[in-house]
Amino acid sequence: MNINEQLAKELGIKLEQVDATVKLIDEGNTIPFIARYRKEVTGSLNDEVLRNLFERLTYLRNLEDRKASVLAS
Picture 1 (cartoon, one colour):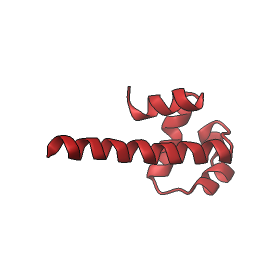
Picture 2: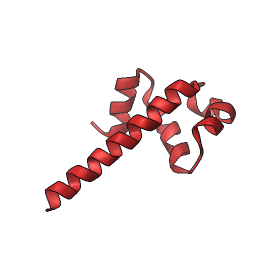
Picture 3: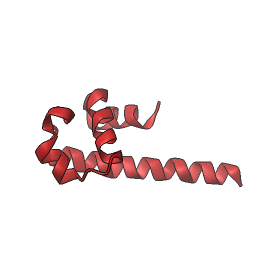
Picture 4: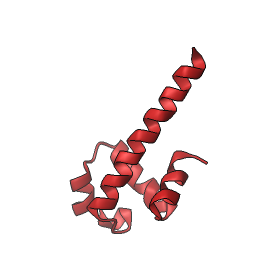
């Protein structure tokens, strides 16, 4: 299970919504900008869900990086 699938399952939202939101975040868009101006892209996710997704995404990516560095050493 990849990170996006895990986020969709944990947050109870569609995988397509997660994929679109992660893409917007990776492009450098802020959560308030996404919540206000990109509702059509995210499927109208509210700012609370977006914030939870962002925090969880950051945590899971950091965890993956940490796992990789531990396994490499």
